Image (cartoon, rainbow, N blue to C red; front, top):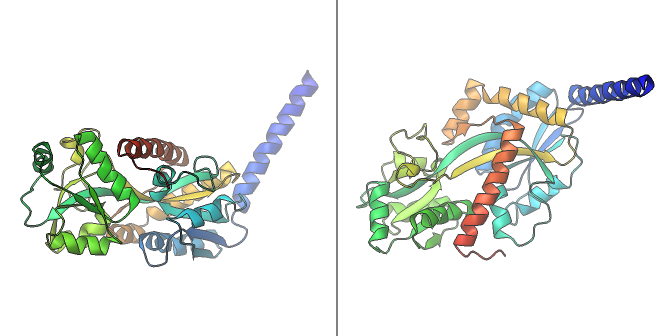
Length: 318
């Protein structure tokens, strides 16, 4: 009995030493942050904001590597199949939690092949309208929907489209979505009054809003956006509505827990840097920093939510 206890104690000590060694020795070589989008977009900008700070902190080069294609599937799959040592990371968007509802089969298991680390930035989706629109509030839109007004909403990605379908589901409405190839064309049509409503992340609409060309009716967060504090949460008039755009960091399955925790601590430290915060806010977002367990719970919750929304909207996976 004593021998067994001593053996267990020895094994436990060896395990703790091994985990500690993993964290202390990380990183032992350059770290690659894969973004599953083309260079120059919001994901790339988020990665580059933390790139140099992490490189300085770690004493190793941090390389931002764009692997676009198939609505983020190509880059995500690359990281899901990478060695689980923390030296290959994924910085992706809410597409991660939307894709399971949009594709019948993915080459990876979102919940089991990737390890959530933290959020880098968050930006609520916003319901926007032309500045001279007759709709001044979310209540105005809901009233118009109840009176069977012919309304539609423009979107530029699948995350925004499901955010609009969530509004439809909760309001018991059937507004059609009009898809645009990018936020730019959507904003041009909104500003010109060619589409009555649009749904996009605050980070995508801030320029047009500040320029006085479109107006935010409400945001998808539980509290007002720090950039536009006068825009109320949509949930005030449509209980249960929550739609947040985010950019988050994940590692491949098998990455040691101590390495995941170290990366989270270091990224959280970087996100507290005033220069980093200013740059993220310049993108129309707020710094993240969510703990790994909380991020994992959020991913699971949002996959389930968007699955229900897609089913209610009768969206057939590709």
